[in-house]
Length: 422
View 1 (cartoon, helix red, strand yellow):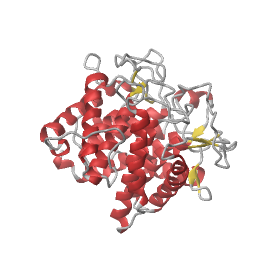
View 2: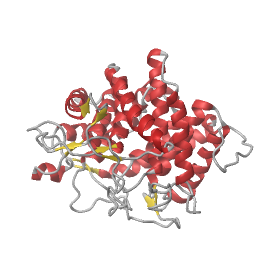
View 3: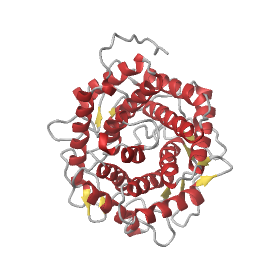
View 4: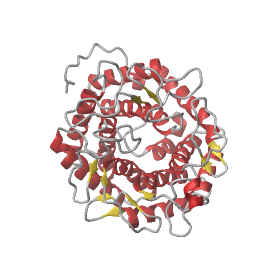
Protein backbone atom coordinates (compact mmCIF):
# COMPACT_ATOMS: atom_id res chain seq x y z
CA UNK A 1 0.00 0.00 0.00
CA UNK A 2 1.54 3.29 -1.07
CA UNK A 3 1.06 6.30 1.16
CA UNK A 4 -0.72 9.21 -0.46
CA UNK A 5 1.77 11.49 -2.20
CA UNK A 6 4.75 9.46 -1.01
CA UNK A 7 7.41 7.76 -3.06
CA UNK A 8 9.59 5.00 -1.68
CA UNK A 9 13.23 5.21 -2.64
CA UNK A 10 15.50 2.23 -3.22
CA UNK A 11 16.50 1.09 0.26
CA UNK A 12 19.83 -0.54 1.03
CA UNK A 13 19.99 -2.73 4.10
CA UNK A 14 17.37 -3.69 6.65
CA UNK A 15 17.66 -1.53 9.74
CA UNK A 16 15.67 -3.93 11.90
CA UNK A 17 18.22 -6.66 11.19
CA UNK A 18 21.25 -4.41 11.27
CA UNK A 19 23.55 -4.99 14.25
CA UNK A 20 24.77 -1.40 14.04
CA UNK A 21 21.21 -0.04 14.18
CA UNK A 22 20.25 -2.32 17.05
CA UNK A 23 23.36 -1.27 18.95
CA UNK A 24 22.43 2.38 18.33
CA UNK A 25 18.94 1.75 19.70
CA UNK A 26 20.48 0.14 22.77
CA UNK A 27 22.73 3.13 23.44
CA UNK A 28 19.82 5.54 23.06
CA UNK A 29 17.64 3.47 25.36
CA UNK A 30 20.27 3.32 28.08
CA UNK A 31 20.78 7.09 27.86
CA UNK A 32 17.07 7.57 28.47
CA UNK A 33 17.05 5.19 31.43
CA UNK A 34 20.07 6.88 33.01
CA UNK A 35 18.55 10.34 32.60
CA UNK A 36 15.30 9.39 34.33
CA UNK A 37 16.93 7.74 37.34
CA UNK A 38 16.99 11.17 38.96
CA UNK A 39 13.16 11.18 39.05
CA UNK A 40 12.98 8.93 42.12
CA UNK A 41 11.56 10.65 45.23
CA UNK A 42 10.66 9.04 48.58
CA UNK A 43 7.06 8.28 47.59
CA UNK A 44 7.54 7.25 43.96
CA UNK A 45 8.73 9.16 40.88
CA UNK A 46 8.29 12.84 40.07
CA UNK A 47 8.66 15.06 37.02
CA UNK A 48 12.09 16.34 35.95
CA UNK A 49 12.80 19.70 34.38
CA UNK A 50 14.54 20.19 31.04
CA UNK A 51 17.95 19.63 32.65
CA UNK A 52 16.94 16.47 34.48
CA UNK A 53 16.50 18.12 37.88
CA UNK A 54 13.75 17.82 40.46
CA UNK A 55 12.05 20.91 41.80
CA UNK A 56 12.47 21.62 45.50
CA UNK A 57 8.88 20.59 46.21
CA UNK A 58 8.74 17.65 43.79
CA UNK A 59 6.05 15.15 44.73
CA UNK A 60 5.35 11.70 43.38
CA UNK A 61 3.00 11.41 40.40
CA UNK A 62 1.21 8.08 40.10
CA UNK A 63 1.17 7.83 36.30
CA UNK A 64 4.88 8.60 36.17
CA UNK A 65 5.55 6.14 38.97
CA UNK A 66 3.71 3.37 37.14
CA UNK A 67 5.43 4.13 33.83
CA UNK A 68 8.86 4.24 35.45
CA UNK A 69 8.19 0.98 37.25
CA UNK A 70 7.24 -0.67 33.95
CA UNK A 71 10.35 0.61 32.17
CA UNK A 72 12.84 -0.16 34.92
CA UNK A 73 11.37 -3.62 35.49
CA UNK A 74 11.99 -4.50 31.84
CA UNK A 75 15.44 -2.93 31.98
CA UNK A 76 16.15 -5.11 35.03
CA UNK A 77 15.17 -8.16 32.98
CA UNK A 78 17.95 -7.19 30.59
CA UNK A 79 20.48 -7.17 33.42
CA UNK A 80 21.07 -3.41 33.48
CA UNK A 81 22.50 -2.37 36.87
CA UNK A 82 20.50 0.00 39.06
CA UNK A 83 17.17 -0.77 37.40
CA UNK A 84 15.77 -3.51 39.64
CA UNK A 85 15.98 -1.30 42.77
CA UNK A 86 14.12 1.46 40.93
CA UNK A 87 11.40 -0.98 39.84
CA UNK A 88 11.15 -2.19 43.43
CA UNK A 89 10.89 1.43 44.59
CA UNK A 90 7.98 1.93 42.21
CA UNK A 91 6.17 -1.21 43.38
CA UNK A 92 6.61 -0.12 47.01
CA UNK A 93 5.17 3.33 46.21
CA UNK A 94 2.20 1.87 44.35
CA UNK A 95 1.44 -0.49 47.23
CA UNK A 96 1.98 2.22 49.82
CA UNK A 97 1.58 6.01 49.73
CA UNK A 98 -0.03 6.24 46.28
CA UNK A 99 -2.68 3.59 46.88
CA UNK A 100 -6.07 4.46 48.35
CA UNK A 101 -6.15 2.18 51.38
CA UNK A 102 -9.70 3.26 52.24
CA UNK A 103 -11.48 2.57 48.95
CA UNK A 104 -9.02 0.68 46.77
CA UNK A 105 -7.44 1.86 43.57
CA UNK A 106 -4.88 4.62 43.23
CA UNK A 107 -4.66 8.34 43.90
CA UNK A 108 -3.52 10.66 41.11
CA UNK A 109 -0.46 11.82 43.04
CA UNK A 110 1.21 12.15 46.41
CA UNK A 111 -0.49 15.52 46.86
CA UNK A 112 -3.93 14.09 45.99
CA UNK A 113 -3.38 11.26 48.46
CA UNK A 114 -2.46 13.67 51.23
CA UNK A 115 -5.42 15.95 50.52
CA UNK A 116 -7.90 13.14 49.75
CA UNK A 117 -8.71 14.83 46.43
CA UNK A 118 -8.74 14.01 42.75
CA UNK A 119 -10.49 11.16 40.97
CA UNK A 120 -9.90 7.52 40.10
CA UNK A 121 -8.81 7.60 36.44
CA UNK A 122 -8.93 4.63 34.05
CA UNK A 123 -5.89 6.05 32.22
CA UNK A 124 -3.83 5.91 35.41
CA UNK A 125 -5.06 2.47 36.46
CA UNK A 126 -4.17 1.03 33.05
CA UNK A 127 -0.56 1.99 33.73
CA UNK A 128 -0.64 0.51 37.22
CA UNK A 129 -1.75 -2.77 35.65
CA UNK A 130 1.04 -2.54 33.07
CA UNK A 131 3.63 -1.75 35.76
CA UNK A 132 2.48 -4.65 37.93
CA UNK A 133 2.63 -7.14 35.07
CA UNK A 134 6.15 -6.08 34.07
CA UNK A 135 7.35 -6.15 37.67
CA UNK A 136 6.00 -9.69 38.12
CA UNK A 137 7.92 -10.88 35.06
CA UNK A 138 11.05 -9.23 36.46
CA UNK A 139 10.60 -10.97 39.81
CA UNK A 140 10.27 -7.77 41.83
CA UNK A 141 9.27 -8.39 45.45
CA UNK A 142 5.52 -7.91 46.14
CA UNK A 143 4.77 -7.33 42.46
CA UNK A 144 2.36 -10.28 42.57
CA UNK A 145 0.30 -8.46 45.20
CA UNK A 146 0.28 -5.30 43.11
CA UNK A 147 -0.86 -7.32 40.10
CA UNK A 148 -3.68 -8.91 42.11
CA UNK A 149 -4.91 -5.52 43.32
CA UNK A 150 -4.63 -3.88 39.90
CA UNK A 151 -6.45 -6.61 38.00
CA UNK A 152 -9.25 -6.66 40.56
CA UNK A 153 -9.84 -2.92 40.24
CA UNK A 154 -9.62 -2.91 36.45
CA UNK A 155 -12.02 -5.86 36.13
CA UNK A 156 -14.61 -4.85 38.73
CA UNK A 157 -14.53 -1.05 38.71
CA UNK A 158 -13.52 0.10 35.24
CA UNK A 159 -14.51 -2.65 32.82
CA UNK A 160 -18.07 -2.34 31.50
CA UNK A 161 -19.18 -5.61 29.95
CA UNK A 162 -22.25 -4.09 28.30
CA UNK A 163 -20.38 -1.25 26.57
CA UNK A 164 -17.23 -3.25 25.93
CA UNK A 165 -14.95 -0.44 27.15
CA UNK A 166 -13.20 0.80 30.26
CA UNK A 167 -15.13 3.58 32.01
CA UNK A 168 -13.33 6.89 32.38
CA UNK A 169 -13.27 8.02 36.01
CA UNK A 170 -14.95 7.96 39.41
CA UNK A 171 -14.84 9.85 42.68
CA UNK A 172 -12.51 8.44 45.31
CA UNK A 173 -15.28 6.25 46.77
CA UNK A 174 -16.25 4.91 43.30
CA UNK A 175 -19.36 7.05 43.11
CA UNK A 176 -19.98 9.77 40.50
CA UNK A 177 -19.13 7.97 37.27
CA UNK A 178 -17.92 10.61 34.82
CA UNK A 179 -20.40 11.35 32.00
CA UNK A 180 -17.69 10.92 29.39
CA UNK A 181 -16.28 8.10 27.30
CA UNK A 182 -12.73 8.54 26.08
CA UNK A 183 -10.52 6.84 23.51
CA UNK A 184 -7.20 7.69 25.16
CA UNK A 185 -7.78 5.80 28.41
CA UNK A 186 -9.13 2.85 26.47
CA UNK A 187 -6.12 2.85 24.14
CA UNK A 188 -3.72 2.42 27.05
CA UNK A 189 -6.09 -0.10 28.59
CA UNK A 190 -5.64 -2.21 25.44
CA UNK A 191 -1.87 -2.13 25.98
CA UNK A 192 -2.37 -3.13 29.61
CA UNK A 193 -4.81 -5.91 28.69
CA UNK A 194 -2.30 -7.52 26.33
CA UNK A 195 0.34 -7.57 29.05
CA UNK A 196 -2.10 -8.81 31.69
CA UNK A 197 -3.21 -11.68 29.46
CA UNK A 198 0.40 -12.80 28.99
CA UNK A 199 1.36 -12.55 32.65
CA UNK A 200 -1.81 -13.89 34.30
CA UNK A 201 -2.49 -16.51 31.63
CA UNK A 202 -6.13 -15.39 31.50
CA UNK A 203 -7.27 -14.83 27.89
CA UNK A 204 -10.27 -12.77 29.05
CA UNK A 205 -7.99 -9.74 28.92
CA UNK A 206 -7.44 -10.24 25.18
CA UNK A 207 -11.20 -10.54 24.69
CA UNK A 208 -11.61 -7.22 26.46
CA UNK A 209 -8.92 -5.62 24.32
CA UNK A 210 -10.66 -6.84 21.18
CA UNK A 211 -14.00 -5.43 22.29
CA UNK A 212 -12.44 -2.01 22.94
CA UNK A 213 -10.82 -2.03 19.52
CA UNK A 214 -14.04 -3.14 17.84
CA UNK A 215 -15.95 -0.19 19.25
CA UNK A 216 -13.44 2.67 19.16
CA UNK A 217 -11.51 1.77 16.00
CA UNK A 218 -13.41 -0.66 13.80
CA UNK A 219 -16.79 1.02 14.41
CA UNK A 220 -16.20 4.65 15.40
CA UNK A 221 -12.94 5.42 13.57
CA UNK A 222 -14.14 3.32 10.65
CA UNK A 223 -16.95 5.82 10.16
CA UNK A 224 -14.40 8.62 9.75
CA UNK A 225 -11.86 7.19 7.35
CA UNK A 226 -9.81 5.82 10.28
CA UNK A 227 -9.41 9.19 11.92
CA UNK A 228 -9.81 8.50 15.64
CA UNK A 229 -12.37 10.61 17.49
CA UNK A 230 -11.64 10.64 21.20
CA UNK A 231 -14.45 12.38 23.07
CA UNK A 232 -17.93 10.88 23.50
CA UNK A 233 -20.88 11.08 25.86
CA UNK A 234 -22.17 7.98 27.72
CA UNK A 235 -24.43 7.13 24.74
CA UNK A 236 -21.37 7.18 22.45
CA UNK A 237 -22.43 10.35 20.73
CA UNK A 238 -19.46 12.40 19.51
CA UNK A 239 -18.63 15.58 21.44
CA UNK A 240 -17.19 17.68 18.56
CA UNK A 241 -16.57 20.83 20.62
CA UNK A 242 -15.10 19.12 23.66
CA UNK A 243 -12.26 21.24 25.09
CA UNK A 244 -12.40 23.65 22.15
CA UNK A 245 -11.19 26.26 24.63
CA UNK A 246 -8.30 24.00 25.74
CA UNK A 247 -6.55 22.94 22.52
CA UNK A 248 -3.27 22.17 24.29
CA UNK A 249 -4.73 19.98 27.03
CA UNK A 250 -2.21 17.22 27.65
CA UNK A 251 -4.70 14.32 27.81
CA UNK A 252 -7.96 15.49 26.26
CA UNK A 253 -7.24 18.15 23.63
CA UNK A 254 -9.82 19.48 21.23
CA UNK A 255 -10.16 17.65 17.92
CA UNK A 256 -8.13 14.55 17.06
CA UNK A 257 -4.56 13.47 17.69
CA UNK A 258 -2.69 11.87 14.73
CA UNK A 259 -0.13 10.44 17.15
CA UNK A 260 -2.93 8.34 18.57
CA UNK A 261 -3.95 7.12 15.13
CA UNK A 262 -0.52 5.54 14.72
CA UNK A 263 -0.41 4.35 18.33
CA UNK A 264 -3.67 2.48 17.80
CA UNK A 265 -2.17 1.11 14.58
CA UNK A 266 0.60 -0.81 16.30
CA UNK A 267 -1.69 -1.89 19.14
CA UNK A 268 -4.00 -3.52 16.59
CA UNK A 269 -1.06 -5.40 15.13
CA UNK A 270 -0.01 -6.55 18.60
CA UNK A 271 -3.54 -7.66 19.37
CA UNK A 272 -3.68 -9.57 16.10
CA UNK A 273 -0.36 -11.26 16.87
CA UNK A 274 -1.49 -12.11 20.41
CA UNK A 275 -4.73 -13.68 19.17
CA UNK A 276 -2.89 -15.66 16.50
CA UNK A 277 -0.40 -16.84 19.09
CA UNK A 278 -3.22 -17.92 21.37
CA UNK A 279 -5.54 -19.72 18.97
CA UNK A 280 -4.32 -19.26 15.40
CA UNK A 281 -7.30 -17.02 14.64
CA UNK A 282 -7.74 -13.24 14.53
CA UNK A 283 -10.16 -10.94 12.67
CA UNK A 284 -8.88 -10.02 9.19
CA UNK A 285 -9.85 -6.40 9.73
CA UNK A 286 -7.21 -5.86 12.43
CA UNK A 287 -4.45 -5.64 9.81
CA UNK A 288 -6.57 -3.59 7.40
CA UNK A 289 -7.53 -1.12 10.10
CA UNK A 290 -3.93 -0.86 11.32
CA UNK A 291 -2.70 0.05 7.86
CA UNK A 292 -5.42 2.63 7.34
CA UNK A 293 -4.85 4.20 10.76
CA UNK A 294 -1.18 4.66 9.94
CA UNK A 295 -1.90 6.09 6.50
CA UNK A 296 -4.47 8.56 7.83
CA UNK A 297 -2.30 9.56 10.78
CA UNK A 298 0.80 10.20 8.71
CA UNK A 299 -1.11 11.99 5.97
CA UNK A 300 -2.74 14.53 8.29
CA UNK A 301 -0.09 14.63 11.02
CA UNK A 302 3.37 14.37 9.49
CA UNK A 303 4.57 17.67 8.05
CA UNK A 304 1.01 18.76 7.36
CA UNK A 305 2.03 22.40 7.85
CA UNK A 306 5.14 22.19 5.68
CA UNK A 307 7.57 21.42 8.50
CA UNK A 308 8.73 17.87 9.34
CA UNK A 309 7.51 15.97 12.36
CA UNK A 310 4.20 14.69 13.69
CA UNK A 311 2.05 17.56 14.96
CA UNK A 312 -0.24 17.37 17.98
CA UNK A 313 -3.85 17.85 16.86
CA UNK A 314 -6.13 18.30 13.85
CA UNK A 315 -9.73 19.40 13.45
CA UNK A 316 -12.63 17.47 11.95
CA UNK A 317 -11.43 18.33 8.45
CA UNK A 318 -7.99 16.95 9.36
CA UNK A 319 -6.46 20.42 9.26
CA UNK A 320 -3.80 21.31 11.86
CA UNK A 321 -4.94 22.88 15.13
CA UNK A 322 -1.92 22.64 17.46
CA UNK A 323 1.23 22.59 15.33
CA UNK A 324 3.65 21.66 18.12
CA UNK A 325 5.54 18.37 17.84
CA UNK A 326 5.31 16.34 21.09
CA UNK A 327 8.06 13.77 21.43
CA UNK A 328 5.60 10.96 22.12
CA UNK A 329 3.90 11.41 18.74
CA UNK A 330 7.22 10.76 16.99
CA UNK A 331 7.90 7.77 19.25
CA UNK A 332 4.55 6.15 18.52
CA UNK A 333 4.96 6.74 14.78
CA UNK A 334 8.31 4.94 15.00
CA UNK A 335 6.81 1.94 16.73
CA UNK A 336 3.91 1.82 14.24
CA UNK A 337 6.22 2.00 11.22
CA UNK A 338 8.45 -0.75 12.64
CA UNK A 339 5.43 -2.92 13.47
CA UNK A 340 3.91 -2.55 10.01
CA UNK A 341 7.27 -3.22 8.42
CA UNK A 342 7.65 -6.36 10.52
CA UNK A 343 4.08 -7.48 9.78
CA UNK A 344 3.93 -6.73 6.03
CA UNK A 345 7.52 -6.45 4.78
CA UNK A 346 6.51 -3.50 2.60
CA UNK A 347 9.35 -1.02 1.92
CA UNK A 348 7.17 2.06 2.50
CA UNK A 349 7.13 1.32 6.22
CA UNK A 350 10.90 0.87 6.33
CA UNK A 351 11.23 4.26 4.67
CA UNK A 352 8.93 5.85 7.20
CA UNK A 353 10.88 4.22 10.03
CA UNK A 354 14.12 5.71 8.74
CA UNK A 355 12.62 9.12 8.09
CA UNK A 356 11.13 9.39 11.57
CA UNK A 357 14.34 8.32 13.29
CA UNK A 358 16.29 10.79 11.15
CA UNK A 359 13.93 13.53 12.35
CA UNK A 360 14.20 12.45 15.98
CA UNK A 361 17.99 12.27 15.81
CA UNK A 362 18.26 15.69 14.25
CA UNK A 363 15.66 17.56 16.28
CA UNK A 364 14.49 15.66 19.37
CA UNK A 365 17.45 13.94 20.98
CA UNK A 366 18.96 16.41 23.43
CA UNK A 367 22.70 15.74 23.45
CA UNK A 368 23.40 18.74 25.65
CA UNK A 369 21.06 18.11 28.58
CA UNK A 370 20.01 14.50 28.06
CA UNK A 371 16.85 12.59 27.13
CA UNK A 372 14.60 13.89 24.33
CA UNK A 373 13.15 17.35 24.06
CA UNK A 374 9.57 16.75 25.08
CA UNK A 375 8.03 19.21 22.64
CA UNK A 376 9.03 21.39 19.70
CA UNK A 377 7.08 24.06 17.86
CA UNK A 378 6.52 24.12 14.09
CA UNK A 379 9.92 25.84 13.66
CA UNK A 380 11.61 22.99 15.56
CA UNK A 381 12.29 25.24 18.54
CA UNK A 382 11.85 24.09 22.14
CA UNK A 383 8.34 24.64 23.49
CA UNK A 384 6.47 23.91 26.71
CA UNK A 385 2.91 24.73 25.65
CA UNK A 386 1.74 21.17 26.31
CA UNK A 387 4.55 19.34 28.10
CA UNK A 388 6.99 21.33 30.24
CA UNK A 389 10.21 19.72 31.38
CA UNK A 390 11.17 16.11 30.69
CA UNK A 391 8.80 14.07 32.76
CA UNK A 392 8.25 11.14 30.44
CA UNK A 393 10.55 8.15 29.88
CA UNK A 394 7.95 5.66 28.69
CA UNK A 395 7.22 6.63 25.06
CA UNK A 396 10.76 7.37 23.92
CA UNK A 397 12.28 4.38 25.69
CA UNK A 398 9.70 1.97 24.25
CA UNK A 399 10.55 3.33 20.80
CA UNK A 400 14.09 2.03 21.31
CA UNK A 401 12.83 -1.36 22.47
CA UNK A 402 9.83 -2.28 20.31
CA UNK A 403 11.70 -2.52 16.96
CA UNK A 404 13.86 -5.30 18.43
CA UNK A 405 10.96 -7.42 19.68
CA UNK A 406 8.22 -9.56 18.12
CA UNK A 407 4.68 -8.19 17.95
CA UNK A 408 3.65 -10.75 20.56
CA UNK A 409 3.98 -11.52 23.39
CA UNK A 410 3.93 -8.18 25.20
CA UNK A 411 7.15 -6.36 25.99
CA UNK A 412 8.15 -7.71 29.40
CA UNK A 413 7.30 -11.29 28.48
CA UNK A 414 9.15 -10.99 25.17
CA UNK A 415 12.25 -9.51 26.80
CA UNK A 416 12.27 -12.27 29.42
CA UNK A 417 12.17 -14.87 26.64
CA UNK A 418 14.92 -13.20 24.64
CA UNK A 419 17.10 -11.75 27.39
CA UNK A 420 20.27 -13.46 26.15
CA UNK A 421 19.91 -11.88 22.70
CA UNK A 422 20.03 -8.31 23.98
